Image (cartoon, rainbow, N blue to C red; front, side):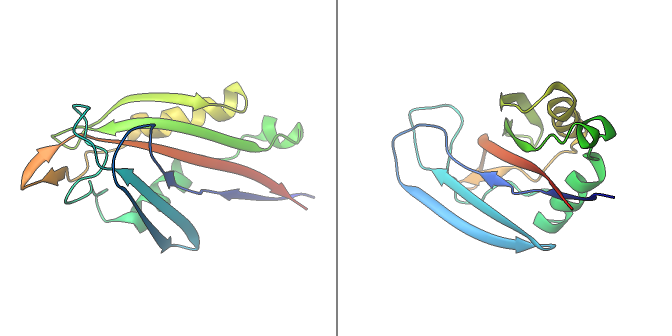
Length: 148
């Protein structure tokens, strides 16, 4: 019988932009999370802020939320489907996740699960720049891996 592992590598990374890159690695709940942002004033949504948006309860709770809301579908297990779904979303000035979409998918059932998880996401503590709320864009890579 196959043992199922779902590795959530939250890769909150940049969208092509000009500016200063800031990277930070976080270990949360046994998962490595890499957050990278880019400082820019070209876009209405800031890619790097004085204070990053925060999921309620922090990064560990974000990982728990994703694990709870993304079960590995039996159809994908039976078909030996693995791969990474790359999601893109914005945390707006009020902390609401908006503009949610799949940048790169694996297959419809996995892609839909990931997008549904984003749609269930609660409001975050908004990002701030100079003490003012700003929108921040994120990419999130969720990797599905089967092991024996």
